[in-house]
Image 1 (cartoon, helix red, strand yellow):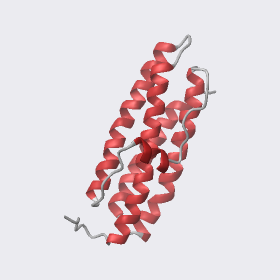
Image 2 (tube, rainbow, N blue to C red):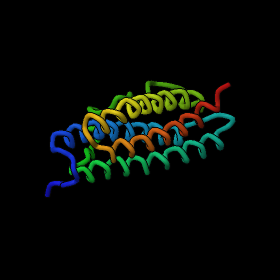
Image 3 (spheres, rainbow, N blue to C red):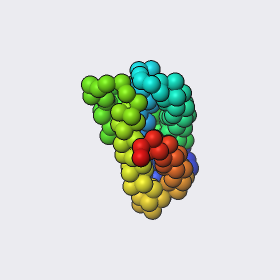
Length: 157
């Protein structure tokens, strides 16, 4: 059954396609954060291990909310690793040592990339595609990523 929520089918299709990219980015970032949680080493292992756990737990909730936003506007969410890797703007880790600051730099860059993507879609979602709900939703999501990025950035002087 089609969602009758005041969006044209074409506008909903376009917004859903952008949300699919966002979902892929969130899932890749979640996986990279889990990797950091599992594999970080060093003198501050325990603090880093707990920090990364808090971050991946937040991302877990974000992933679910993005997929549910897609469903609210009448589309199915991609849910395979193949699809995520085809849709994402992010890259997987290259070979690295397992130091916490190295992980943090990479994760910070990914959060900032997602923030840029979200910021770039706020106005078009509202004005061009008349999807004020998704525009508002991604504004809140952007603020969450800004806070997560701030927490990562705070480890650097």
